[in-house]
Image 1 (cartoon, rainbow, N blue to C red):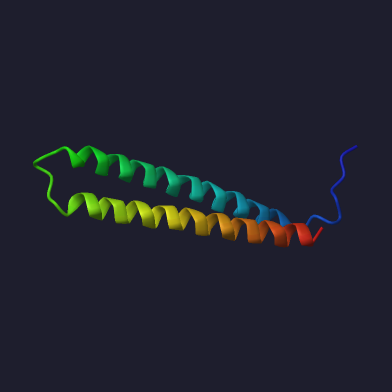
Image 2 (cartoon, helix red, strand yellow):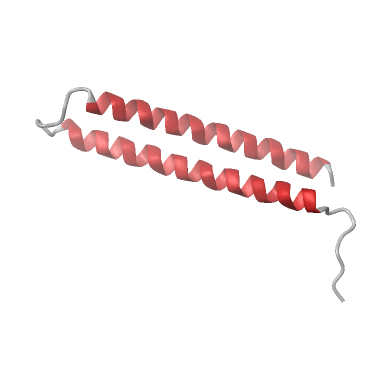
Length: 86
C-alpha cells in the first residue's frame, strides 16, 4: 500500500524542484565559464585576435563563475528552508 506523507506538501515538492533547477543552472554556468576560459586561452596564441578579446572573455568567465556560486548559495538556502519545514 502506498501512502503520501502528510508532511510533504506540493509547496515542498515545488521548492525541492526549484533547488534542483538552481543547482543545474549553477552547473551550466560553470561549464560556460570553462568554455570561455578555453576560448580565451586559444586566442592568446592567435595573432589575428583583437587585443580586447581575451580580457573580455576572462571577465565573462569570471561573471559566470560568480553566478554559479550565487546560484548554489540560493539553492542551499532553499534546501535549508525545505528541510526546516520537515
